Image 1 (cartoon, one colour):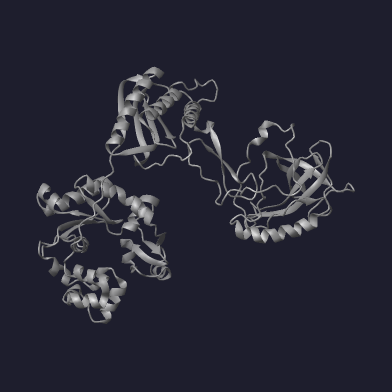
Image 2: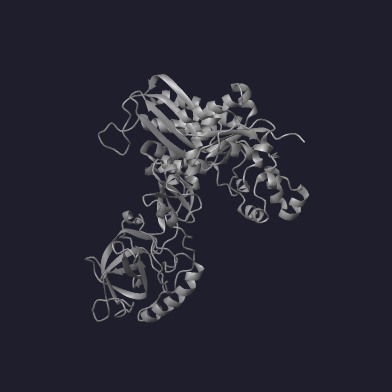
Length: 585
């Protein structure tokens, strides 16, 4: 059987501590420990000098060094911080496999032949990483990745054929399998050499396949090939212009040329993009950047159109005397760069079944994108429905082309038949400016749920029905029990209107802390308008939001009312003040 291939492994000691310094600014020269599940998984050199070791509990580590800095374990942070190190290694050698954040391996044959030997290759990689990333590292070379990792902790190069002898004196804890190590210790097997001396068949029968694999590693027979990562292809295209571009016609020509280059580069890799970043630098050093998004795949013509529209919007911006357009650059553009984003395989996008990608839709998209290129991304917005207990909470306005993510988790309101007795219409006196939704509020706590609309005089029955319905609805529609039932209001007022509600005797209607209505609502007065008779109502539906934060707490009760003229309104009472929040259609 042939010997395992020579492997070169780069190891960065105490990498979780270094990652915390790189990302969060925690000084690695101070006593620092990284905790996971209340146990130390990594510590700095100063912390080890104070007696802290891996596996200690947090209280014991702080008892040994009271001034120690505690950092939570974050694998994502470790991986992000290690990416520049891997990129630096790839500048010297090709075919790098990331073992874990803080360790990467590559085949030793190529670098050693190109750089003049294994020792020279190790020195070159360590020096390049130190100069590029300011990170200390050690390199180990041996037969197989497992032995190279142990050699890297000593900065050692194991000669060819000497891996088995190198591993023989290492303790079984080097295998990194706690359950297996505990069993081997109880059986009297202390070193990797003792474990490797056991018959392979007996190891398989006693310890299973994982034990057999560990047995091969202990014997220096690590035959697993490296799973090297492929460096990402550079798909960015850049155009330099000696003469600054300050005219729209010249910008259109430059846009088409650059778009064709980008499309050809993407096609060469069998890729397409759904988002396009456009970057420009002016002669005065001003940097401009905009990201365009498209539901389908961006063709060469689509890329050219978006670049042309964006350059048109930049070059024809406002001159500083007002207007909605952004300010025009102070000089012409000398560098234009296209960065494809949202890259996917050419055949990876499924078109719509019912013609959603038709010509009419494409023309509408082009028109909206053109408006955004001239006036900015916030000039065109669309509504996204999400979770919430009131109509204003369930709507979020997002710029056209951005990710349509709701402001709150949870399904949007489900369609349903109108409640009995609710047959309103929006009055013609409502201005068009009230159709904008109110801004979102902090996420509320759990409350009771709505009840069906009844007639005047049935308020207490509606409250009891609402409580019964609330228990069922809280189970079927988590996590927003107590939200207003469908249908949704047609008009949500950006600013609620002050109102007054009186009973048949002319006394103000109040709601107690126990949700008891003083009397049936009979008349509604909005602002300084004339009173209107109420023919049907339902409620109250309480909302007790963020009661755990006194500064943000909000307690209110909501009602649905139907007027004699057919108008239906959503009312709310908060702090004794009645408000009109929305109008039904």
